[in-house]
Length: 346
Image (tube, rainbow, N blue to C red; front, side, top):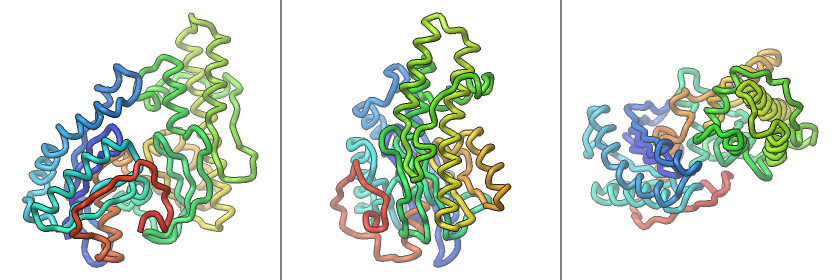
């Protein structure tokens, strides 16, 4: 079974082809990705209308590219999968419309996939795939969540962000520092030249006793510190502030992840989403988990950002469990807001 996956939830257009058998982990045959970061940089963030228009331009050429890379043709596609939500409504509609139209033209079934489920399962395409059950730390631009994952479709929410997510804290802090867009990677690069103990920034909800996250107060603290430094802040102080900001975020993510492992009694954790590529997070979490004999799994770095491979993979793994989840009903809808729970994703 060959599954074509289309991702268009925000500012990346991703297409991939995955092959699945009746059992075993599906195999990635080819994938292609276009990032809109350069286009949105001039505006300091994603412009939804521009994002939607760019998806329209990119999705079919990327599909052709993937098929050529895989040595396949349209006739070799057995199922078409797309991101149904959450995300920007207009951007989601592009992927859903193309997927359902293509499936209808080929007389193939189609399946809508939860964006976060794609991230959660993406480490199964890595060289060191996890095994169920595990704790999942989902850290993307708009979401920070801890989940208990017992099987495909069996997800229990343990905690989540109540205001700004970790990715938003990176991006908004970077914008305050004048680092441009996308801010998270820029802040992480600058942090390499700074002292993470230079500024005493808050670790919101670090000792709350629950598994929820809050990063809005950290962003406010960064703004306050910049005001104290003045308009002529030197690059070294900015690097120190970047390092201190990154360390505050990482400390909270690691502390809460370890608490989730203790609370569930599990000894395996998956880290997925764009922030999962952060080197400091990986370094600190790896060190803490080694002390506790806990296995940590990450997606390949190329698959940390939004991509079509994770959508095709999630669809393939769902269909391995229940082939009837794919449908020949080509009417579609999208869900810009969609909680990741066992009930919502079935």
